[in-house]
Length: 155
Image 1 (cartoon, rainbow, N blue to C red):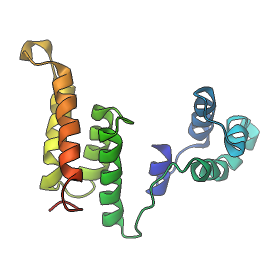
Image 2: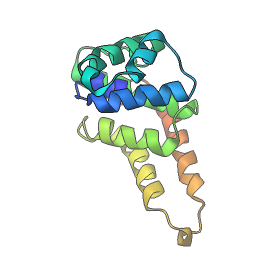
Image 3: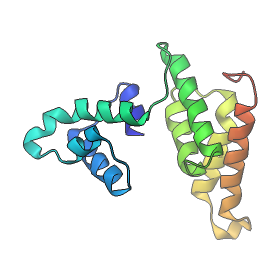
């Protein structure tokens, strides 16, 4: 997710990049640049941005994005939908990214409204509704799959 944020031009602090590198190593990922990134000291923070880009390249973490910002957002939405459907991202997390980084940034397209609605329901859920919370996660997955099964970007 940090790699995507950077792809969209967001500035991510060196401390966050270093911590992410350390977390990745602890989870079993390993590349030469990742080891360097995770081992940076406070005095070496200026190297973090370049090392993180190298790690993202080595691990192929970011999707290729078109130069046009609107097209790039739609490609990210497609990527998040794929991550949700393939089970690599929890539905409520991927759906929230689609809501915040897709739906909001694309001026609220109708095609993304169902995902936004299901994420909202997932977040607001209480036991008194008489529906399992996981039902909303399943609906996010189903809607993500439905989006992927149509023309892209969706009309």
